[in-house]
Amino acid sequence: MTAPVSSSPRPLDGVTVVSLEHAIAAPFCTRQLADLGARVIKIERPGSGDFARGYDERVRGLSSHFVWTNRSKESLALDLKHEGAGEVLGRLLAQADVLVQNLAPGAAARLGLSYEALRERFPRLIVCDISGYGDSGPYRDKKAYDLLIQSEGGFVSVTGTPEEPCKAGASVADISAGMYAYSNILAALMLRNRTGKGSRVEVSMLESMVEWMGYPMYYAFDGAPPPPRAAAAHATIYPYGPFPAGDGGVVMLGLQNEREWQVFCAAVLEQPGLVRDARFESNSRRTAHRAELRQLIVEAFAGMRADEVIGRLEDAGIANARVNDMAGVWAHPQLAARERWTQVDSPVGPLPALLPPGASSAYAPRMDAVPALGGHTRTVLAALGYGDAEIDALQAAGVVA
Image 1 (spheres, rainbow, N blue to C red):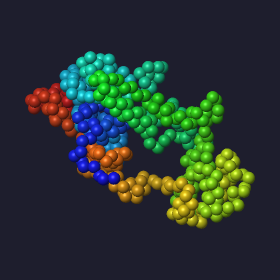
Image 2 (image 1 turned 90 degrees about the vertical axis):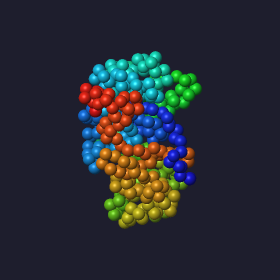
Image 3 (image 1 turned 135 degrees about the vertical axis):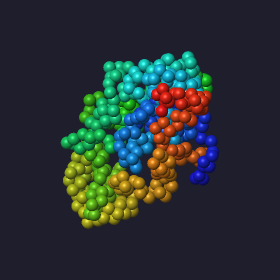
Image 4 (image 1 turned 90 degrees about the horizontal axis):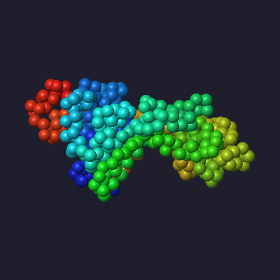
């Protein structure tokens, strides 16, 4: 594929997004919009900003979460509770296409920023509200963090070992909500192109997470037992999971059918007689006798390095993968070969960044800097028509920083 020219038009060029966001769900959504060219103005609390800025200091003093979800945005430090903030917000929203917020339940409405309060003044505005449980129902005001939604949505119950459930190692509830907000905003923009009118998009973390739980829910349909927790192995297909090699490496492999099972026994394990073993003659029986089969596989792999195991699996056409740690992912040869890494600027200098999934032949994604807190306050206000003296007065009054 021919690399697109960086100056080519992007799909969301000219679209302005104002975001009252913190943590992951809304920032992850708006970063996708920025990748497509949207101008994202991130409103942050003066002094502290998005609290995700303080989660850790792993990226040369910056927060890993913040660096991940906030490139290509402009930071406006605005005290939303100050009486002088209303005029600034009004000017912003008059020029905006989308307002995104994931404040505490009811906070946006108390600030006069609900869709109902804004629709008459700004009829083309799309308002996206992201919350834990939605704006109605008995859980409406319940606090919602990623791990809590993983739990309420059933994810934790089917993840982990038979002895103990566990959460995902990434913020899957936040990510799911962010992605559904992103796709629904794109749909709302397309609809506005036809109708000329804005709309409200409401996304709940719980509903997003439960949508992702479709397979285990239907597996447990009508009171049936749910999929058993099987650690990193597949719950209902075997062998499908991680196996140690003799050098300490771990290889993930997956068999999908009886033909692959026969090839695996003959070419990988070099034990073709296992095909006739009654314990392993079908997937259901291999799953029922997984402990015995795992022991046989571990013994066969004990005399090989992980590279040798993967070589045999590749030659046999058996699906496989390395169980990489984070250092292994940073150095992944496939990502390097496809030139998926670039750099973005930040308050601490250039940082590596992965290009967004979904390479287009028509345009290059926007990959601008991770903003400093309030780093764009003056430029944003100037673009709204405020003069230098007015901006100085707003700063002196504590409206902005």
